[in-house]
Image 1 (cartoon, helix red, strand yellow):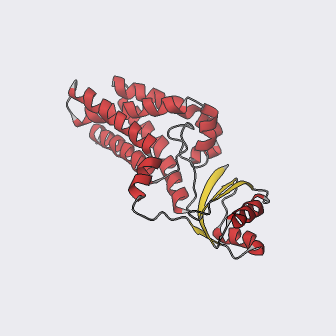
Image 2: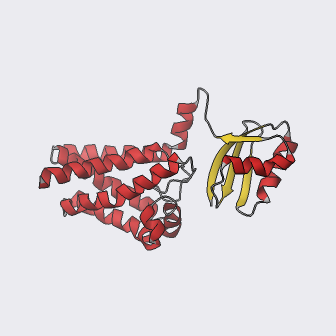
Image 3: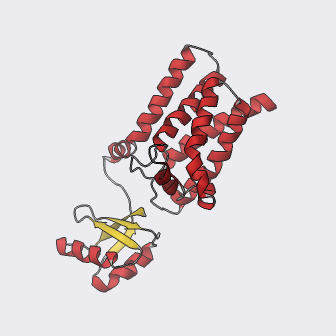
Length: 239
């Protein structure tokens, strides 16, 4: 099940909320509809990604309600953003802090810093995924093309990250590790981009399933940064 967020206009009372909720939850593919009179928010928990036109057609017999794309407005956008993605930002901050400490106490080169950053990144993120491997794989398969076709890859993914983290931190098999980084992150980033382009509200599995965080451009930036570092290392050691 995924959560899809929309805005809905035309509600005047709690009776409208109840009517909309009941009507939507009669659909076979919708397990829950969360309707807010206060801010006009609509969250559809469904196995199907409904088009706005479909939702409007479903609701047309019960009232003059208009479903539209979800948009966040107001002065609290930045606060809301940091509140939503706080777990990822804190984790990335920890990765950066550990990388700087290790960098200052060992090899003071750009390769050294990138090696530590990628190592701590994979170690910490793999630990969070290992909390519930099967649930992670299910969530991951929603946007990772490889896991969608080969579910076992999602099961192995946390262990792949763990091994890569060990290789980076120990300075072993670096060429292989950087190539593997590109192999696992490029398809994943492409899948995330497609989900965001189609306005699909899918949970991000990068921190496992302990946190309910939607996919965003932050995940793309995070992955592309890792890919750029891997590409830099490979180009410097092959070309």
